[in-house]
Length: 177
Image 1 (tube, one colour):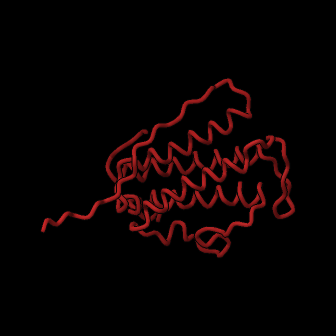
Image 2 (tube, rainbow, N blue to C red):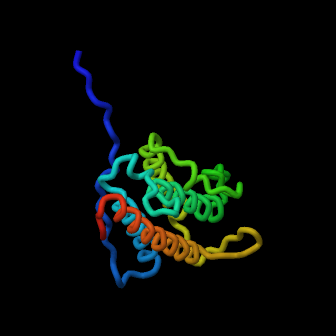
C-alpha cells in the first residue's frame, strides 16, 4: 500500500483586473474595489494555510487569514446588511465586543475562509447591481449613500492591504504585488 502525504492547501495565484482611469464613477468605484479585493488575494498567493494564519508582526495579532475574515465581515455588514437590508447572520462575533475574525483563526479552515470571502464578494456584487451611487440608506439613524459605502470599502481595503504588505514581507520576504 502506498501512503501519500496529506495535501497542503496553498492560496492560488490571482490576476488583478485593470480599469479605466477616466471612467465615470459608476464604473470606476466598483472597478477600484475589485482591484483592492484582488490585491488582498495577491498578498496571500502562494502561501500555505499555516502561513496565512501566522502572526509575524509582533506585538500585533494581524494575520493574512484574519484580514480575509475581517474584510468578509466588513463587506457583509456594509453591503448586505446595511445597503440591501438582508437578514443575514453577523460573522465572527461582530457586535460582541470581540474581534473573532482576527483572534479566533484556524489554519485548518483557511481554504474554507478564503472561498467564503469569494462567495461573499459575489453576494455583495449581486446586491449592489443596478443600484445608483446616489441611493441613500440608513443605519443607526444616519443616512449614507452607496457612493459613501464604495469609498469606505476602498479605504478599508487600502489600509488593510498596507497591513498585508507588512505581514507578507515578514512571512517570506515578498514585497509588492
